[in-house]
Length: 67
Image (cartoon, rainbow, N blue to C red; front, top):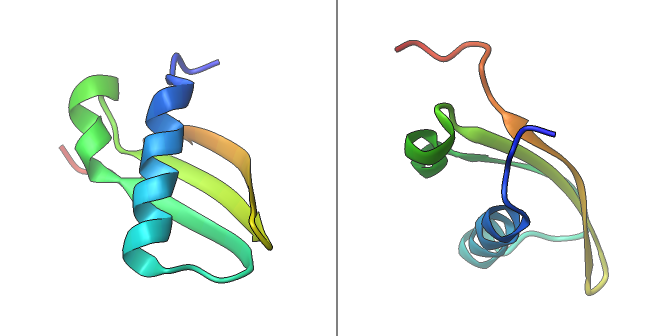
């Protein structure tokens, strides 16, 4: 929908999970590094259930960004 590559979303979520050692539940990852490629940082909402990670949504974070 927003032209976001699935590989980018997976990479961002994997990095977030590894760096933060998240537990079960819903989480939000905001990736500033993706601003160069997509024009805005990406906001990714995902849920962790045991060993399963489900991507809920991913979109460019346009509100509240000062350029």
